[in-house]
Image (cartoon, rainbow, N blue to C red; front, side, top):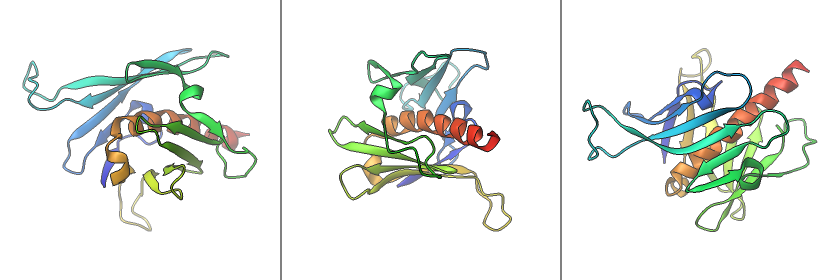
Length: 188
């Protein structure tokens, strides 16, 4: 199991994801623009790939095209381009008070199904068939009033480590959608 600290829990699509030793493993970059925009998801390249200035180098592992209007969001990952609602299928009634726009289900390259459970203030990835074994979960930032101060985190269990990139890509998508739904509900 390992944890990634999230630099900006309110904008996971504009954040850095840092290991406990301070290494930035992942970056998400999204331009601030009206209408359609693209989030680039960049991962730290191995140290044996030299950089121009000797610093850390990052390579794009995925992109999310956030479309405006009725056009579907698109996710580019693993050499494929899919509509987000095809990769992450909606599931659930959407009628429970804490149901933030229904869960999302996807099938990983290992053939197993996983469910992102969108909860109030957090998300949890569970195994679809295996008694909902937790694969990854997000934790909100703690301000240090009642708990020890800590940044927002994404905790990835051993079962999720072999599909880390897919966990991160799907997390960025569902968490942005969850936050938008949470904001819309709060302002309604």
